[in-house]
Length: 25
Image (tube, rainbow, N blue to C red; front, side, top):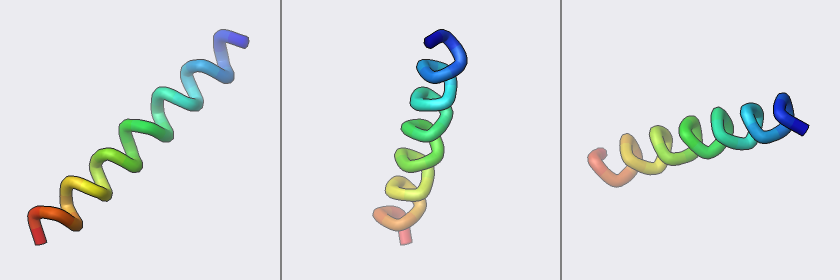
């Protein structure tokens, strides 16, 4: 469960980063 939460958190950060870069571009 803890590992799953960490994975979701990491995935969310990655998606947010990609979205931010896309918006900035």
